[in-house]
Image (cartoon, rainbow, N blue to C red; front, side):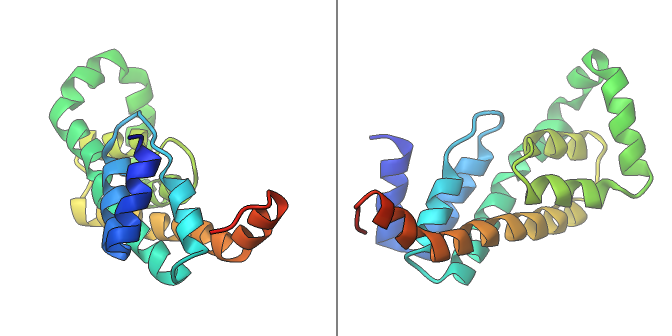
Length: 163
């Protein structure tokens, strides 16, 4: 059974709680993207898009803590290999731009795992990290959920499909 099929059945069975679990698992995979955005889009057209966005944001936020933990635990290995790039990132975090950087990457389809790892390496405040991640993931997942809410019927009509 592939991830999308399993996720779809989990969400249908458990609703918003299933959506939290699916997004937690999908976001916990570092550098191996799973198609959770598709599910947020689809279920935004089926369930309440506000609650879909909130559920997905909660799951994603806590799933992204794996990248942060990886940075905290394995940062020393990366520091030696990527010293030049880490200095640039460190300047961003030291100048108070860490919150904005985390929020921006969380709110867009940019490679968020890298920012999570950097947050861990630089020992960024975990509460601020969670808040910035949640706010960014909320923006992105609400956009996906409302895209599904307003667009899913149109897309299904084009391909002559039904829910």
